[in-house]
Structures are given as structure tokens and as C-alpha cells.
Length: 165
View 1 (cartoon, rainbow, N blue to C red):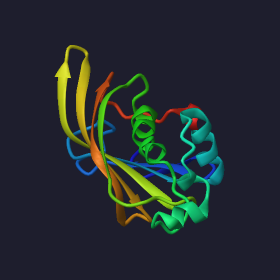
View 2: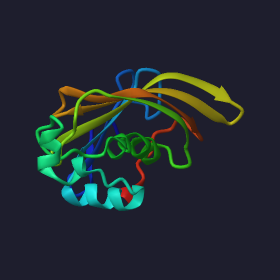
View 3: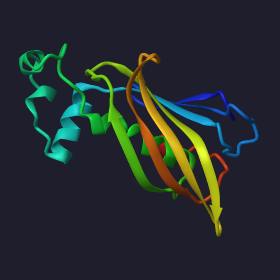
View 4: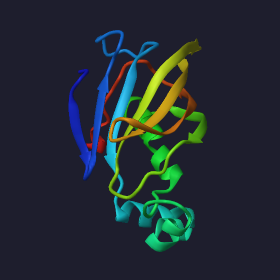
């Protein structure tokens, strides 16, 4: 189950592995990853939903005048990798909180790897409360976003949501 890759959508893939076991059960230290390249269409669709029409996302000259190389991908669109990773492996999970630190810009066409690492897991009745370290890397190297998330998981058994394939 671990170490395989599945194509999810154009420019996206879900990759997962465990640093501490290959049992298919989430443990402290396990890392789940997803890779995605954000497109012009992604930025446009996100803007329509969020009503964020900041010219830095649509006009190269405005972005350059503000000190960026080109148009930016919305930071919260990049951060949306985290709930996608969690819900892909734990259908029915409840996303409780997320802190975010934007470290470096993401431009349309950049390949971004989202990572979620289990740093604490506590059982509460028939559910699990997971504290997760979150980060996104550009081209697998440059940290562009990091933070922490909390999620209530219905199980620790890792799944792959076939509806996302």
C-alpha cells in the first residue's frame, strides 16, 4: 500500500508512505504526500468561488510591480492540499483547525508537494484526534507554506478514496 502513486486529476497525484511502518495504519511520524501543479484554470475557478480578484493572481505586470516574478497562486488554494490529503486517506475525517505560515510565493505552473505528518494521535471514544505538521514544497525542495492542523479521524486505517482517482 505504501510507496505507490495514483493519478488523481490533471497535474495531480497522491503519493503516500509511512516512515515507521507498512501496516496501513497511521502512526506518529507517518507522512502522507500529494503532488499538484496549479494551472490558470485552477486560479480562475478558485477566484470565482472565493471572490478573491486580487490582480496579483491575474495580471503579470501587477505581480511584478509588487516584487514577484509573475502571477501568484492563491495561498489558500495551495493550502487546500492538506484537507485533500487527509480526506483521501480518511473519508469522514473532520478538519478542526489549521495554522498557516506563507514562506515563499507559488506561481502558476509550479509543482507543489503537500505533506502531512502525524505528530500526535490520541484516542477519544471511537475516534482519533490527530495533530499534524503540514508543509508544501516547491519542486520538492523550497518550503513555501507550513503550519499545523488538527483533525478528528474515524479510524487510523489508511484508505485511498477511489472517487478521487
